[in-house]
Length: 262
Image (cartoon, rainbow, N blue to C red; front, side, top):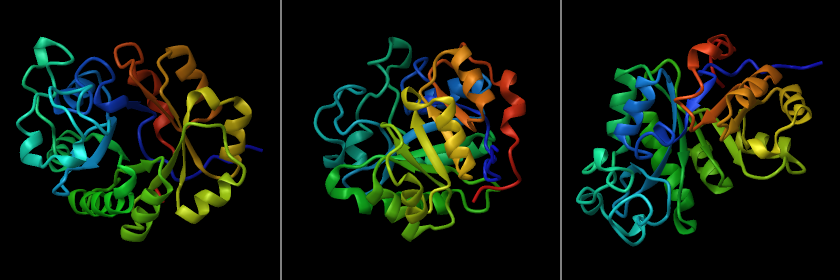
């Protein structure tokens, strides 16, 4: 029999990197576009600058989504703030800056937007990144009824989050099929669930994860039909780039799972 976990209290649709592809990823412009499309939960990536300030950025290097070069970890916040993080997407967003986690916390809370914060890090700074970013999340969202869901591919990052802020809800990100011993890994890390690549999700996989009492978020799902199927199977949420095609109003009933996260 399917055992749906009591720990999910976020929306069923999550805008990927703020607004999918409609605006420059991981920027305030992207968060505004996602909000304008009716999304009340966003996923975004956070990593540390050289001077240990949490900022929104996905890659290790700057080239793909800015006019800068080199490693993000090697740049101070001041150096990053001198770069353009919007013109690569389209002229409409030229001059868009890199947002700090502090700025995003203010914007999302003012607009009642829930967050899934993925912690990124170079291999040399994984524990530091988990510790510093988790502490920042705990401080910036202090007193919020439903805190952000923190996720990472890195076991070391999640260990740091667990050790630093055990009260924050956590999810293990996987880009592979469910590994042997996945339940034990979640227990060790204190994770409430898995954020799993949609390529590896079947009805049987959904049943297995839910039967164990864990949450399941599918990424990145850009077909409205597939999104509906996954939610009907019992996935707690789907992350999507297709915010202009998948309507949050169509899945409103899927969002109410329980009164509070673990």
